[in-house]
Structures are given as C-alpha cells and as structure tokens.
Image (cartoon, rainbow, N blue to C red):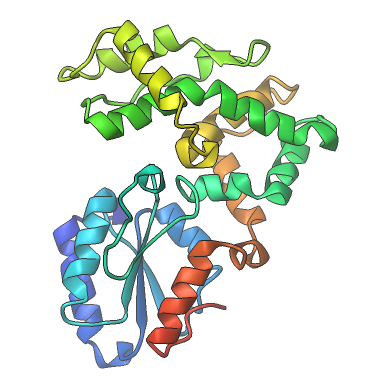
Length: 280
C-alpha cells in the first residue's frame, strides 16, 4: 500500500498506535494536510522532538484528527491552510489548530519578497525593479477567479474548480477570459446553485467593495500555475511545470523567513505553554 492509498481511518489508527508507543513519549505530533507540507515544515521543526505527519482527506479531516488525538495525548497540533478563514468576521478557534499567515502556505512563500524575486530571476529575464509588478499582475489576472472561489465559499454554491485556466490568461491585457472559465466550471458542477454569469458578476462586484487582502484571497496553487505560464511567456519555453516551480518556492523559503511568520509565533507560544521545544 502506498501513502496515497491510506485512508483517514487507517492513518488515525496508525497515529494512535504511535502515540501509545513508549519510544514516542513526549514526542510532539505535528499534523499537516499534504505531502508537500511535510517537505516544507520538516525544515523548520526539530525532528528529534517532533513527528510531522500528513492526514488524508483535506482540512476537515485534519481538524477531526487533531480533535480525536488530543483526547488521549496533549502534544498534538495541526497546521492548516487559512483558505478564506481570515477574511471572515468570526475568529477561528479550534484547539491545537494553527493557520497559515496567508490563504495557504504557497501564498506565504509568494508573499516573501526575496523568495519571489529569486524565482523571477530563475524563470525570466525581467529586471529586479519589475519583479513585484509581475507579482501584482498575476494577482490581478487571477482576481475574478479568486473572487469566484471566495463567493463559492461564502454562499456554498457547489461549484467544482477542476478546470484548467492557464490557456485563458492574457498577460498583455492583464486579464483572464472569465466568461470561458466560468463556463468550464459550470460544466463540472451539475449541482451549481447559480449558473447565471450576470448574477455572479454582480456578486463579485459586491465582494470587491470589501477590498480583501489579495494574499488572503488568492489560492497559492492558482498563483503558481499562472506563474508557470508567465515564465513560458517570458522566453522560458522549456520552463518547468507548476509542481517543479512549487518545489523551487519551498526550497527558497528558509528558516529565517519562517521565523517572521505569525504561524511561527503561534506554534512557539503553544510549545512554551506545553514546555517543549519544537523548532530548529
């Protein structure tokens, strides 16, 4: 059985056994959503004192797993993507659960100026004074798409975002063919609660008036897919795919940057309260 075949219940049972093993006494179990999160966070946590584990099933299952395990063992914490939570008026409060600073960890990497600039140097010939214009342009291009996902989150529109969009991007006009993108989304969303484009656009205009932080609004996977397309449009026809670019962002995000995050502060405070050392 490969890791991708492990069910949530099997992983929960495995962790219960690990927690009960004498060799793991006083170990801290840090639970994350995906394998890429493990590759990132194992750089920042002391692996002599911590085990970083991936929970299948997405963020709801991650939260469920932490809730179940802390009933029998206190040194368990979870790290999840904020998604749109920080744009809500209701504070997020789940025991031993911590949020990324931005929409997701990918956006936290993109948000770090030096990390982003390093990737632009690697994948384009754009001079440094224009690097952050490029980042803002990508955020602008993805704006309508991001608002649609935010609207789906708020109103539970049952839209399925499985469609590609890179071919719909125009960097010259700084826009995406949103009509075509919405049509693609609807084709994958048989239970969509709104299928009228004009209604969607009116709802998006209302959301825009709230002026959300673009790093909280934009999905990091979307940004990196758009960045990959951006590289190809700037003379890097052999640029790597978005998975490789995601890896490059993770490799350039060093501990010095993690120490500046609220996520570090939150987990450090938790560790101090629980009298354990979890960071490198």
